[in-house]
View 1 (tube, helix red, strand yellow):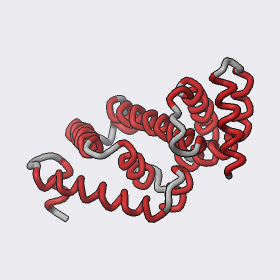
View 2 (cartoon, helix red, strand yellow):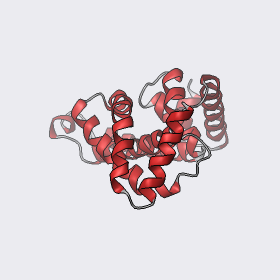
View 3 (cartoon, one colour):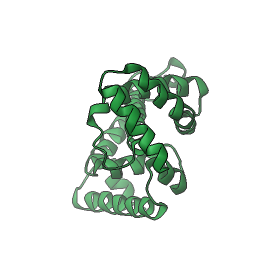
Amino acid sequence: MILEQQDDIYFLEQVLAGNKQAFAFIINRYKNRLYAVVLRMVKNPEDAKDLVQECFIKVYQQLGKYDRKGSFSSWLYRVSVNHCMDTFRKKKLETVEFLDEKESGSLTPEIVYLQKEKYKHLEKLLAILSKEDRLVVLLKYTNDLSYEEIGEMLDIPVQTVANKIHRAKKKMRENMERKEGGYFHEMYQNR
């Protein structure tokens, strides 16, 4: 693991110094692992391939932001997962706004409105969390990943994952208790 980190730093420094070919080493080292993670998230091989390419572009563009506080692999996964989550969020909102004709036949305007409201309230609840806690919650509940998978992906202990999810749920629950109205408040009250 230490040798891998040293190799990563070496090639990272090469890329930052202007040797763009050195990024190929980083891609080759992580492409299969990143593909496996993204495939678990999207469940579609073609979409996963496209997202992995986008993730490496995003990582390349943000290499200068890597602060070396944690392992490079954790940072790479974090940037990639954040990119995937942003992509999912945009697609979900588009899906709600631009329903298929097949789906729209069975959905009334009221149901469409309630779905939009639900997403708005969910976004507000997630916005109260720190970026890392939000990521852990989304990985768990949007992508149905296990605590072990999340810990491996973010390079944090499983107990830390469990603690983050517990604290995030508590914080969101407290927020719902304080604020009246909205989809999730009503759901919480009727539990």
